[in-house]
Length: 265
Image 1 (cartoon, rainbow, N blue to C red):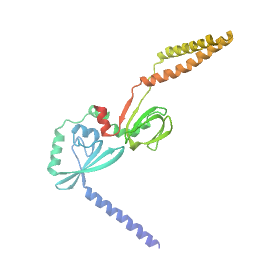
Image 2 (image 1 turned 90 degrees about the horizontal axis):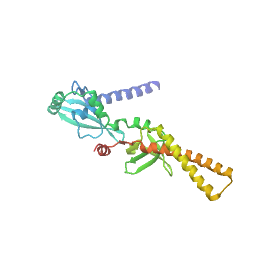
Image 3 (image 1 turned 45 degrees about the vertical axis):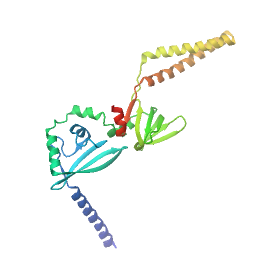
Image 4 (image 1 turned 90 degrees about the vertical axis):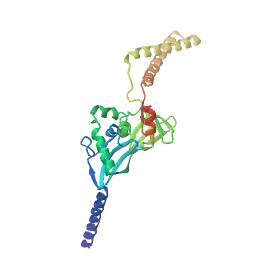
């Protein structure tokens, strides 16, 4: 019985080894693209060297020599936050011409990388969503072109939980096309005194109007004025917070090539 189990596991192991060998043989040996690039072409390098200009949301690529006269590029790209792979074949002359052009192109610098990285938002979608503070007002456009607007409750298991005026909605990360949010609410402490003071004066003024209409006793008049000032200060706090939110510039985050093109126009 034990020997049967042993041979069963051994046969399974040998099968996986053989299968892996076949896959590796079909894939071929990875080729160095150029000395500056190395064995993997990343997103910034692809933009700089213009290798795969027609691949939207490019992530990376490697080249494999599958035969003496045939090279296959394994291209990874992002589609709705999901990593997908495609392949493209080159004959030896096409690949040699590509290598020659890359060697003649000036080397990519850190400054160039940084300038490109700002537009490669699709590569850092998850980290951006994780860093949006809860309580932030969001506008999310889904695949169908519909907008979900509300307050962010949480981001968990690649899903946004958003409190809308009528319900709580879950928006999966791979169903998003565009996000609008405010990265950091501005603060203007010097405005507080003016806004709070104006709100308190308005509150007292409203209660003074009430006093004139109702003609209460002297004590009640001051009580009403105090209530008006207190309510005015509370309203002033809300007015200050709301004005800071409205004055803060929105950040727009595109997750599809179409939305990125619109934002970059």
